[in-house]
Amino acid sequence: MSIFEEIEQDPANKKFTQHGLKPIYNAPTNARIVIIGQAPGLRVQNTGIMWNDASGDRLREWLGIDKDVFYNSGMIGVIPMDFYYPGKSKSGDLPPRKGIADKWHPRLLNKMADVKLIILVGSYSQKYYLNLRSSDKITDVIKNYQNYLPNYFPIVHPSPRNNIWLKKNKWFEKEVVPNLKKIVTKILSE
Image (cartoon, rainbow, N blue to C red; front, side, top):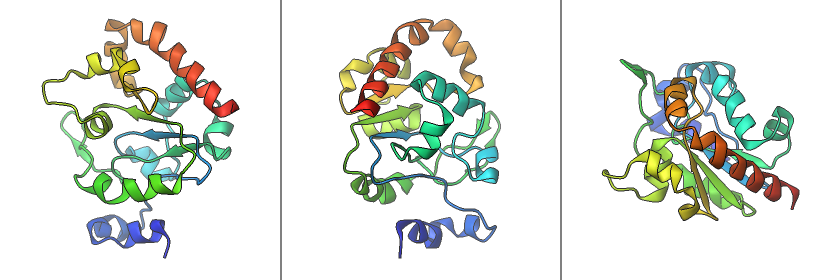
């Protein structure tokens, strides 16, 4: 049985599979870069295509890659903290379910032996992978991204909801994004 089938058959995912929903992730064995975000949004869950929205367009722009490289090269893996859309809350989407990353991420990452960089998109993946304290501010983590290289590169979520953050923190697109593009280009050209 494949990992994909195991995820589908996991009792924790029963309410999703009963509705015909598929887990959303991509773990090609030759991936060089893995993007770990929070969970698929509703549009992504309904289309089955990862980062198939305005956030994805901005993410690809920040990475300096086009849709063909993102979706078809086999060089980019995408593993969210939850494989299914978790639902709506009062102020956006619900957080990813706990325990999903613990159970599945090690197995999926193990399949991708050539990964050179994991891009942590948003606070859920950053708190999980960087073992942050509750007092750590995500803005500070992103500003000090060099502290987590060469393994991890933390970035703000590219959602249009973060436009205010981006306006307040102009250094991100002036300093961090160019360095992210440079690193991504280097890894993909090796």
